[in-house]
Length: 252
Ligand SMILES: Cc1cc2nc3c(=O)[nH]c(=O)nc-3n(C[C@H](O)[C@H](O)[C@H](O)COP(=O)(O)O)c2cc1C
Image (cartoon, rainbow, N blue to C red; front, side, top):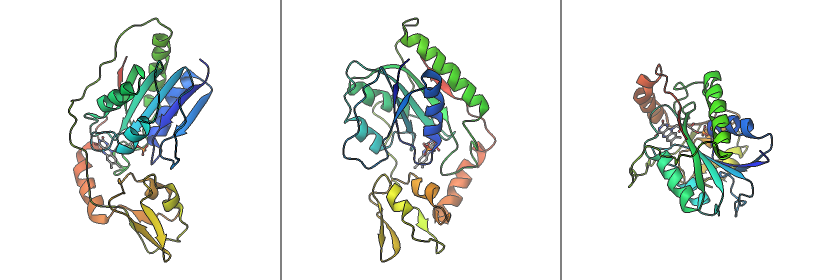
């Protein structure tokens, strides 16, 4: 296949990693579009196949992804959707991703719910997608190619409910430790534009912050962290998932 067009949102890199494993098996030429960049207009898909990859937040697709997808014209274009989650559950996220893409005119050829390390509790699914995941994702990619080339005809049906579960709203943001060097990388990367550097201090707008963890992942001093009480609560909630291997799911 010629170039394929990848749209992804990946605040801490797991979604991008999983999506690229898939895309590279299909084509050596992948045009990537980072939906987390604060650009005024996202580039339209021009290629034969569009891949849309989103992390799962609270069993839903982050609002930012929905908003950015609504800018795209997918008429007559084939698409593959990937919802990437942290071993808990993806609930309505994949259905929401598919419905949103279909509303833009995309024809969904295949979908997957893939596991990556949990961005708020990295001890869950640590290192995933690992080698086994990668092999499964590549195998799926080869099947998708066959389907696109017309050998398999089957409409895609994914789990989930509509109306979707209520979106997650946590009135909390990451905090900055005194070891912060005020380099401004967190403010620059924040996809929501929620962080500003004021009087040499990092200020976070609670209304805008979606707790995506991009700022914690980019901080070179590890000075941007989840508030310790939340970190502890997450650790307790996720404890039972630490030793569970959740499997990827594929829909063709
Ligand atoms: C705010 C937030 C909410 C999340 N909600 C879920 C969830 O409902 N289910 C789940 O299994 N993982 C959940 N996760 C984990 C992410 O879906 C997972 O780590 C994903 O790989 C993150 O993508 P990224 O590495 O591209 O940032 C959540 C993570 C964050 C930051």
